[in-house]
Length: 162
Image 1 (spheres, rainbow, N blue to C red):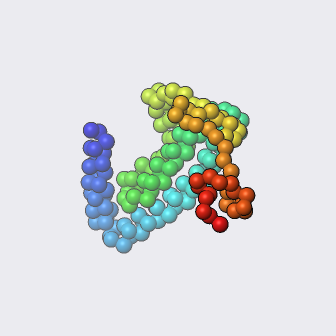
Image 2 (image 1 turned 90 degrees about the vertical axis):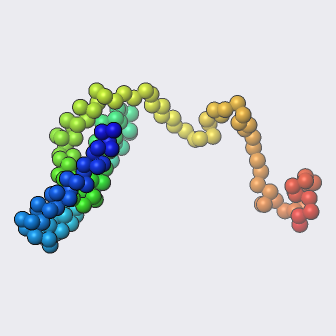
Image 3 (image 1 turned 180 degrees about the vertical axis):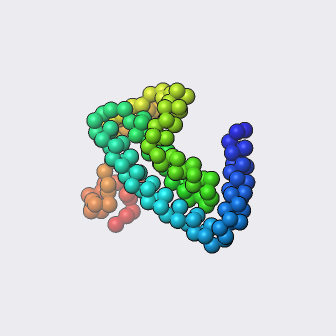
C-alpha cells in the first residue's frame, strides 16, 4: 500500500516543484536545470558505477562477501534511474544516493531487514553438473551433417537422404 502512495505522491510533488521553480526563474531556465541535472548526474553515476563494478569484481575474485558491493551498485543504479525521471524531487533523492556515506547508512539500515538464505557458487564446465530432475536423461550425440551420406547408416532419420 505504501508503494502505491509513493507512486501517486511523486508526480504531484514533481508538478508542484516545477510550478514553483518555473514561477521563480521561468520556463527555459527550469527546463535547462532539469536537463543539466540529468547530464551531470548521469556522468557521476557512470563513474561511481564503474568503481562499484570494480569493487564487486575484487570481492568475487577474493572470494569475500559480495552483498555490500552488490547493494552499493544497486543503489547507484536506482540513482541513475531517478536521474532519468525529469523532476527536481527525484533528482534530489538521486543526488543523496550518490553520496557514498548516504548509501552506506541506507545499506546499514536495510541490512537488519534483509536476510540471505544461501548462495552457492560453482566452478567448472556446465557439463559436469548432475541432472536436477529424475526425468532428465543424459546422452551423447553425433552431428550427421558432417558425415557423407554413404557412411550415415540406415536409421529412419537418415534413409532416403542423399
